[in-house]
Length: 391
Image 1 (tube, rainbow, N blue to C red):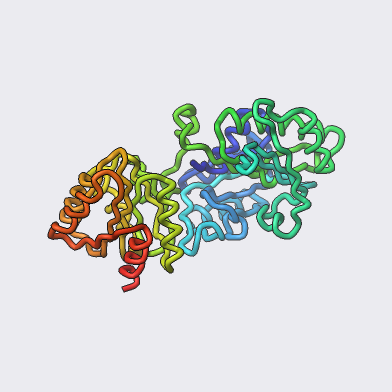
Image 2: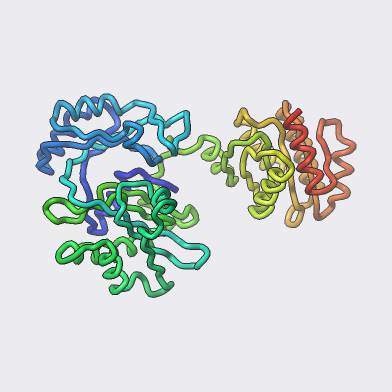
Protein backbone atom coordinates (compact mmCIF):
# COMPACT_ATOMS: atom_id res chain seq x y z
CA UNK A 1 0.00 0.00 0.00
CA UNK A 2 1.18 3.50 -0.86
CA UNK A 3 0.52 6.71 1.04
CA UNK A 4 0.86 10.41 0.23
CA UNK A 5 3.91 12.52 0.99
CA UNK A 6 2.16 14.47 3.75
CA UNK A 7 1.12 11.20 5.42
CA UNK A 8 4.65 9.82 5.22
CA UNK A 9 5.90 12.99 6.86
CA UNK A 10 3.40 12.56 9.69
CA UNK A 11 4.96 9.17 10.39
CA UNK A 12 8.50 10.57 10.17
CA UNK A 13 7.50 13.28 12.63
CA UNK A 14 6.18 10.64 15.04
CA UNK A 15 9.68 9.14 15.06
CA UNK A 16 11.30 12.55 15.75
CA UNK A 17 12.69 12.89 12.25
CA UNK A 18 12.74 16.57 11.16
CA UNK A 19 10.44 17.32 8.21
CA UNK A 20 9.43 20.20 5.98
CA UNK A 21 6.09 20.83 7.67
CA UNK A 22 2.88 22.21 6.23
CA UNK A 23 -0.90 22.02 5.98
CA UNK A 24 -2.81 19.79 3.55
CA UNK A 25 -6.16 20.87 2.09
CA UNK A 26 -8.77 19.39 -0.25
CA UNK A 27 -10.84 22.47 -1.16
CA UNK A 28 -10.06 25.97 -2.40
CA UNK A 29 -12.17 27.40 0.42
CA UNK A 30 -9.43 26.18 2.81
CA UNK A 31 -6.57 27.88 0.95
CA UNK A 32 -6.33 31.19 2.77
CA UNK A 33 -6.57 29.60 6.20
CA UNK A 34 -3.86 27.08 5.27
CA UNK A 35 -1.42 29.73 4.08
CA UNK A 36 -2.08 31.85 7.17
CA UNK A 37 -1.59 28.82 9.44
CA UNK A 38 1.78 27.98 7.88
CA UNK A 39 2.80 31.61 8.20
CA UNK A 40 1.73 31.87 11.84
CA UNK A 41 2.80 28.49 13.20
CA UNK A 42 5.96 27.95 11.18
CA UNK A 43 6.99 31.56 10.63
CA UNK A 44 6.98 31.09 6.87
CA UNK A 45 7.15 34.08 4.54
CA UNK A 46 7.66 31.96 1.43
CA UNK A 47 5.88 28.75 0.58
CA UNK A 48 5.97 25.59 -1.52
CA UNK A 49 2.69 24.26 -2.92
CA UNK A 50 2.77 20.49 -3.51
CA UNK A 51 0.26 18.28 -5.31
CA UNK A 52 -0.48 15.12 -3.31
CA UNK A 53 -0.69 12.16 -5.69
CA UNK A 54 0.84 8.69 -5.68
CA UNK A 55 3.41 9.43 -8.36
CA UNK A 56 6.93 10.76 -8.68
CA UNK A 57 8.07 13.57 -10.95
CA UNK A 58 5.50 16.02 -9.58
CA UNK A 59 7.80 19.01 -9.96
CA UNK A 60 8.49 18.33 -13.64
CA UNK A 61 4.75 17.98 -14.25
CA UNK A 62 3.94 21.33 -12.66
CA UNK A 63 2.67 19.88 -9.40
CA UNK A 64 5.22 21.60 -7.13
CA UNK A 65 5.51 25.39 -7.12
CA UNK A 66 7.67 27.77 -5.10
CA UNK A 67 5.73 30.82 -3.94
CA UNK A 68 7.44 34.02 -2.86
CA UNK A 69 4.36 35.58 -1.24
CA UNK A 70 0.93 34.86 0.18
CA UNK A 71 -0.68 35.98 -3.08
CA UNK A 72 1.44 33.73 -5.28
CA UNK A 73 0.82 30.83 -2.90
CA UNK A 74 -2.94 31.26 -3.27
CA UNK A 75 -2.58 31.50 -7.05
CA UNK A 76 -0.52 28.31 -7.18
CA UNK A 77 -3.02 26.47 -4.98
CA UNK A 78 -5.79 27.47 -7.38
CA UNK A 79 -3.77 26.25 -10.37
CA UNK A 80 -2.68 22.93 -8.86
CA UNK A 81 -5.74 21.79 -6.90
CA UNK A 82 -8.04 20.10 -9.41
CA UNK A 83 -5.47 19.90 -12.21
CA UNK A 84 -4.73 16.69 -14.07
CA UNK A 85 -1.08 16.08 -13.26
CA UNK A 86 0.90 14.14 -15.86
CA UNK A 87 4.27 12.69 -14.87
CA UNK A 88 6.46 9.81 -16.06
CA UNK A 89 4.76 7.63 -13.44
CA UNK A 90 1.10 8.54 -14.05
CA UNK A 91 1.01 7.69 -17.75
CA UNK A 92 -0.50 9.91 -20.41
CA UNK A 93 -3.90 9.96 -18.70
CA UNK A 94 -2.43 11.73 -15.67
CA UNK A 95 -3.83 11.90 -12.15
CA UNK A 96 -6.45 14.30 -10.78
CA UNK A 97 -5.03 16.35 -7.91
CA UNK A 98 -7.52 16.26 -5.04
CA UNK A 99 -5.18 17.43 -2.27
CA UNK A 100 -2.36 19.94 -1.99
CA UNK A 101 0.07 20.72 0.79
CA UNK A 102 1.05 24.26 1.69
CA UNK A 103 4.58 23.87 3.08
CA UNK A 104 7.18 26.22 4.46
CA UNK A 105 9.96 27.10 2.03
CA UNK A 106 13.45 26.23 3.28
CA UNK A 107 16.87 27.48 2.26
CA UNK A 108 18.74 24.51 0.83
CA UNK A 109 22.50 24.14 1.17
CA UNK A 110 22.88 20.47 0.14
CA UNK A 111 20.60 17.71 -1.14
CA UNK A 112 20.96 13.97 -0.49
CA UNK A 113 19.06 10.76 -1.09
CA UNK A 114 18.27 8.16 1.59
CA UNK A 115 16.19 5.00 1.35
CA UNK A 116 15.63 1.58 2.87
CA UNK A 117 14.19 -1.44 1.10
CA UNK A 118 14.54 -5.21 0.94
CA UNK A 119 17.21 -6.68 -1.30
CA UNK A 120 15.58 -10.01 -2.17
CA UNK A 121 18.74 -11.42 -3.72
CA UNK A 122 20.53 -11.02 -0.37
CA UNK A 123 17.58 -11.65 1.88
CA UNK A 124 18.52 -8.50 3.77
CA UNK A 125 17.30 -4.96 4.19
CA UNK A 126 19.54 -2.43 2.47
CA UNK A 127 20.08 1.19 3.52
CA UNK A 128 21.08 3.38 0.56
CA UNK A 129 22.35 6.95 0.46
CA UNK A 130 23.58 9.17 -2.34
CA UNK A 131 24.96 12.65 -2.75
CA UNK A 132 22.68 13.03 -5.78
CA UNK A 133 19.57 14.09 -3.86
CA UNK A 134 16.62 15.55 -5.73
CA UNK A 135 17.31 13.43 -8.81
CA UNK A 136 15.55 10.28 -9.95
CA UNK A 137 17.54 7.52 -8.29
CA UNK A 138 16.98 5.21 -11.28
CA UNK A 139 18.86 7.68 -13.47
CA UNK A 140 21.68 7.95 -10.93
CA UNK A 141 21.93 4.14 -10.80
CA UNK A 142 22.18 4.05 -14.58
CA UNK A 143 24.70 6.86 -15.13
CA UNK A 144 26.66 7.05 -11.84
CA UNK A 145 26.13 3.83 -9.84
CA UNK A 146 29.23 4.53 -7.77
CA UNK A 147 27.38 7.47 -6.20
CA UNK A 148 24.89 5.13 -4.50
CA UNK A 149 26.34 3.76 -1.27
CA UNK A 150 24.63 0.68 0.18
CA UNK A 151 24.79 -0.94 3.60
CA UNK A 152 23.30 -4.40 4.13
CA UNK A 153 21.58 -4.89 7.48
CA UNK A 154 21.97 -8.26 9.18
CA UNK A 155 18.57 -9.60 10.31
CA UNK A 156 18.11 -9.31 14.07
CA UNK A 157 20.83 -6.69 14.53
CA UNK A 158 19.20 -3.60 13.05
CA UNK A 159 21.15 -0.67 11.68
CA UNK A 160 24.22 -0.62 13.90
CA UNK A 161 25.82 2.66 15.00
CA UNK A 162 28.99 2.11 12.98
CA UNK A 163 26.87 1.55 9.84
CA UNK A 164 24.98 4.79 10.44
CA UNK A 165 28.32 6.58 10.89
CA UNK A 166 29.62 5.10 7.65
CA UNK A 167 26.52 6.31 5.79
CA UNK A 168 26.90 9.84 7.17
CA UNK A 169 30.61 9.81 6.28
CA UNK A 170 29.79 8.61 2.74
CA UNK A 171 27.71 11.76 2.29
CA UNK A 172 30.60 13.92 3.45
CA UNK A 173 28.77 15.09 6.55
CA UNK A 174 30.77 16.31 9.53
CA UNK A 175 30.20 17.74 12.97
CA UNK A 176 26.64 18.51 14.03
CA UNK A 177 25.20 17.51 10.63
CA UNK A 178 26.86 14.08 10.88
CA UNK A 179 25.43 13.54 14.37
CA UNK A 180 21.99 14.48 13.12
CA UNK A 181 22.32 12.08 10.20
CA UNK A 182 23.42 9.17 12.40
CA UNK A 183 20.44 9.65 14.71
CA UNK A 184 18.05 10.13 11.78
CA UNK A 185 19.22 7.01 9.94
CA UNK A 186 18.75 4.85 13.04
CA UNK A 187 15.25 6.24 13.64
CA UNK A 188 14.40 5.76 9.98
CA UNK A 189 15.29 2.08 10.12
CA UNK A 190 13.32 1.72 13.34
CA UNK A 191 10.27 3.16 11.54
CA UNK A 192 10.84 0.90 8.53
CA UNK A 193 10.88 -2.25 10.64
CA UNK A 194 8.17 -1.38 13.16
CA UNK A 195 5.64 -0.32 10.52
CA UNK A 196 6.39 -3.21 8.12
CA UNK A 197 7.38 -0.95 5.25
CA UNK A 198 8.48 -2.30 1.89
CA UNK A 199 10.27 0.96 1.09
CA UNK A 200 11.03 4.21 2.87
CA UNK A 201 12.57 6.97 0.78
CA UNK A 202 13.59 10.55 1.53
CA UNK A 203 14.42 12.46 -1.63
CA UNK A 204 15.72 14.97 -1.11
CA UNK A 205 17.11 14.89 2.39
CA UNK A 206 18.49 18.41 2.76
CA UNK A 207 20.94 20.36 4.85
CA UNK A 208 19.54 23.84 5.36
CA UNK A 209 21.63 27.01 5.39
CA UNK A 210 21.30 26.83 9.18
CA UNK A 211 22.98 23.40 9.16
CA UNK A 212 19.91 21.28 9.97
CA UNK A 213 18.97 17.99 8.29
CA UNK A 214 15.36 17.95 7.08
CA UNK A 215 13.24 15.48 5.09
CA UNK A 216 11.98 17.67 2.26
CA UNK A 217 10.03 14.88 0.57
CA UNK A 218 9.10 11.36 1.64
CA UNK A 219 7.74 8.17 0.15
CA UNK A 220 6.56 5.05 1.96
CA UNK A 221 5.07 1.77 0.80
CA UNK A 222 3.80 -0.92 3.16
CA UNK A 223 3.38 -4.69 3.16
CA UNK A 224 -0.36 -5.23 2.63
CA UNK A 225 -0.20 -8.49 4.58
CA UNK A 226 0.87 -6.64 7.75
CA UNK A 227 -1.62 -3.77 7.63
CA UNK A 228 -3.87 -5.47 10.18
CA UNK A 229 -1.11 -4.76 12.72
CA UNK A 230 -1.09 -1.02 11.97
CA UNK A 231 -4.58 0.48 12.04
CA UNK A 232 -3.18 4.01 11.87
CA UNK A 233 -1.36 3.20 8.63
CA UNK A 234 -4.29 1.29 7.10
CA UNK A 235 -6.48 4.37 7.64
CA UNK A 236 -4.15 6.35 5.38
CA UNK A 237 -5.15 4.34 2.31
CA UNK A 238 -6.50 6.61 -0.44
CA UNK A 239 -8.73 4.58 -2.76
CA UNK A 240 -8.95 7.51 -5.20
CA UNK A 241 -5.27 6.96 -5.98
CA UNK A 242 -5.67 3.27 -6.80
CA UNK A 243 -6.93 1.50 -9.91
CA UNK A 244 -10.73 1.03 -9.49
CA UNK A 245 -10.54 -2.56 -10.77
CA UNK A 246 -7.84 -3.41 -8.23
CA UNK A 247 -9.95 -1.91 -5.45
CA UNK A 248 -12.99 -3.90 -6.62
CA UNK A 249 -10.94 -7.11 -6.75
CA UNK A 250 -9.85 -6.57 -3.17
CA UNK A 251 -13.47 -6.68 -2.05
CA UNK A 252 -13.67 -10.29 -3.26
CA UNK A 253 -10.20 -11.31 -2.01
CA UNK A 254 -8.90 -11.51 -5.56
CA UNK A 255 -5.32 -10.51 -6.32
CA UNK A 256 -5.54 -8.33 -9.44
CA UNK A 257 -3.03 -6.05 -11.14
CA UNK A 258 -3.89 -4.28 -14.38
CA UNK A 259 -1.36 -4.48 -17.24
CA UNK A 260 -1.29 -3.09 -20.77
CA UNK A 261 -2.03 -6.15 -22.93
CA UNK A 262 -5.10 -7.66 -24.60
CA UNK A 263 -5.29 -11.15 -23.07
CA UNK A 264 -7.21 -11.34 -19.80
CA UNK A 265 -5.91 -14.00 -17.39
CA UNK A 266 -7.78 -15.83 -14.64
CA UNK A 267 -5.54 -18.26 -12.78
CA UNK A 268 -5.37 -19.94 -9.37
CA UNK A 269 -2.02 -19.50 -7.67
CA UNK A 270 0.50 -16.70 -8.03
CA UNK A 271 3.23 -18.92 -9.50
CA UNK A 272 0.90 -20.33 -12.15
CA UNK A 273 -0.34 -16.82 -12.89
CA UNK A 274 3.21 -15.59 -13.52
CA UNK A 275 3.94 -18.61 -15.72
CA UNK A 276 0.74 -17.99 -17.65
CA UNK A 277 1.75 -14.42 -18.40
CA UNK A 278 5.21 -15.58 -19.44
CA UNK A 279 3.93 -18.14 -21.95
CA UNK A 280 1.43 -15.66 -23.39
CA UNK A 281 4.37 -13.37 -24.10
CA UNK A 282 6.41 -16.23 -25.56
CA UNK A 283 3.75 -17.04 -28.16
CA UNK A 284 3.40 -13.42 -29.25
CA UNK A 285 0.62 -12.10 -27.02
CA UNK A 286 0.48 -9.62 -24.17
CA UNK A 287 -1.27 -10.18 -20.82
CA UNK A 288 -3.86 -7.60 -19.78
CA UNK A 289 -3.66 -8.44 -16.11
CA UNK A 290 -2.42 -10.58 -13.28
CA UNK A 291 -5.41 -12.23 -11.56
CA UNK A 292 -4.99 -14.91 -8.92
CA UNK A 293 -8.37 -16.24 -7.78
CA UNK A 294 -6.82 -18.41 -5.07
CA UNK A 295 -7.11 -22.09 -4.28
CA UNK A 296 -10.82 -22.11 -3.45
CA UNK A 297 -12.19 -20.84 -6.75
CA UNK A 298 -15.96 -21.25 -7.15
CA UNK A 299 -18.83 -19.94 -9.28
CA UNK A 300 -18.90 -16.54 -7.58
CA UNK A 301 -15.13 -16.24 -7.80
CA UNK A 302 -15.22 -16.91 -11.54
CA UNK A 303 -18.07 -14.42 -12.07
CA UNK A 304 -16.32 -11.69 -10.15
CA UNK A 305 -13.08 -12.45 -11.94
CA UNK A 306 -14.79 -12.07 -15.32
CA UNK A 307 -16.38 -8.76 -14.30
CA UNK A 308 -13.07 -7.32 -13.19
CA UNK A 309 -11.13 -8.55 -16.23
CA UNK A 310 -13.73 -7.22 -18.66
CA UNK A 311 -13.83 -3.82 -16.99
CA UNK A 312 -10.65 -3.28 -19.02
CA UNK A 313 -11.79 -2.35 -22.52
CA UNK A 314 -8.45 -3.48 -23.97
CA UNK A 315 -9.21 -7.15 -23.24
CA UNK A 316 -9.91 -9.04 -26.48
CA UNK A 317 -9.87 -12.61 -25.13
CA UNK A 318 -9.75 -14.37 -21.76
CA UNK A 319 -7.66 -17.35 -20.69
CA UNK A 320 -8.80 -19.38 -17.68
CA UNK A 321 -5.92 -21.55 -16.50
CA UNK A 322 -6.84 -23.59 -13.41
CA UNK A 323 -4.99 -26.39 -11.65
CA UNK A 324 -7.46 -28.44 -9.64
CA UNK A 325 -5.90 -29.40 -6.36
CA UNK A 326 -7.92 -28.04 -3.46
CA UNK A 327 -10.87 -27.48 -5.78
CA UNK A 328 -12.04 -30.10 -8.31
CA UNK A 329 -11.89 -29.24 -12.01
CA UNK A 330 -15.48 -30.39 -12.67
CA UNK A 331 -16.76 -27.82 -10.18
CA UNK A 332 -14.71 -25.12 -11.86
CA UNK A 333 -16.04 -26.19 -15.28
CA UNK A 334 -19.65 -25.88 -14.08
CA UNK A 335 -18.80 -22.50 -12.56
CA UNK A 336 -17.30 -21.27 -15.82
CA UNK A 337 -20.36 -22.36 -17.81
CA UNK A 338 -22.72 -20.68 -15.37
CA UNK A 339 -20.70 -17.47 -15.33
CA UNK A 340 -20.45 -17.29 -19.13
CA UNK A 341 -24.21 -17.79 -19.49
CA UNK A 342 -25.08 -15.21 -16.86
CA UNK A 343 -22.65 -12.53 -17.99
CA UNK A 344 -23.27 -12.96 -21.74
CA UNK A 345 -19.61 -12.48 -22.60
CA UNK A 346 -18.67 -10.77 -25.84
CA UNK A 347 -15.03 -11.96 -26.01
CA UNK A 348 -13.60 -15.44 -26.70
CA UNK A 349 -12.85 -17.57 -23.64
CA UNK A 350 -10.14 -20.23 -23.65
CA UNK A 351 -10.11 -22.76 -20.80
CA UNK A 352 -7.33 -25.06 -19.66
CA UNK A 353 -8.07 -27.29 -16.66
CA UNK A 354 -5.63 -29.78 -15.13
CA UNK A 355 -5.64 -31.77 -11.92
CA UNK A 356 -8.43 -33.48 -9.99
CA UNK A 357 -11.28 -34.62 -12.31
CA UNK A 358 -9.76 -32.76 -15.27
CA UNK A 359 -11.10 -35.34 -17.77
CA UNK A 360 -14.61 -35.02 -16.34
CA UNK A 361 -14.32 -31.24 -16.56
CA UNK A 362 -13.28 -31.37 -20.23
CA UNK A 363 -16.35 -33.49 -20.97
CA UNK A 364 -18.60 -31.01 -19.20
CA UNK A 365 -17.18 -28.13 -21.24
CA UNK A 366 -17.39 -30.09 -24.51
CA UNK A 367 -21.06 -30.94 -23.95
CA UNK A 368 -22.08 -27.47 -22.82
CA UNK A 369 -23.96 -25.08 -25.07
CA UNK A 370 -21.69 -22.11 -24.41
CA UNK A 371 -18.93 -20.82 -26.67
CA UNK A 372 -15.83 -21.95 -24.78
CA UNK A 373 -12.57 -22.90 -26.47
CA UNK A 374 -11.05 -25.87 -24.67
CA UNK A 375 -7.27 -26.33 -24.55
CA UNK A 376 -5.31 -29.54 -24.01
CA UNK A 377 -2.04 -28.14 -22.69
CA UNK A 378 -0.45 -25.01 -21.29
CA UNK A 379 1.11 -24.02 -24.62
CA UNK A 380 -2.03 -24.95 -26.55
CA UNK A 381 -4.06 -22.67 -24.30
CA UNK A 382 -1.66 -19.76 -24.78
CA UNK A 383 -1.58 -20.14 -28.57
CA UNK A 384 -5.37 -20.36 -28.82
CA UNK A 385 -6.05 -17.31 -26.64
CA UNK A 386 -3.44 -15.17 -28.40
CA UNK A 387 -4.90 -16.16 -31.77
CA UNK A 388 -8.41 -15.39 -30.52
CA UNK A 389 -7.31 -11.98 -29.22
CA UNK A 390 -5.69 -11.08 -32.53
CA UNK A 391 -8.68 -12.16 -34.59
